[in-house]
Image (cartoon, rainbow, N blue to C red; front, side, top):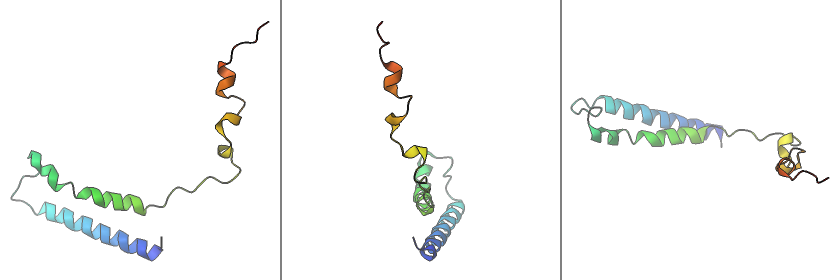
Amino acid sequence: MNPTLKRVIWLLNTAGFVFYLVWLATMSNQHILREQDGIVYFLPVIPFFFVYMLLFSPKPPPPSGSPTDSPPDSTPDSIDDHFSAPPES
């Protein structure tokens, strides 16, 4: 993603989140923390967190040739070795 676009989205999301929290704080005529229906006022906060999670860079892939690239059954300690029947004498 373009760094400038990412910064603009980050700033708009932060501004919207702050303004929403300020709006919630100024609602002094309702007791949203004391009523069961008050959770409805906090549900719009969830999309702000999703935008923040999407803006984080993904974890870089492991370098090629690392041991994690090999298939799981190519190790000498595979499951078949542990659970095979003992050799008959």
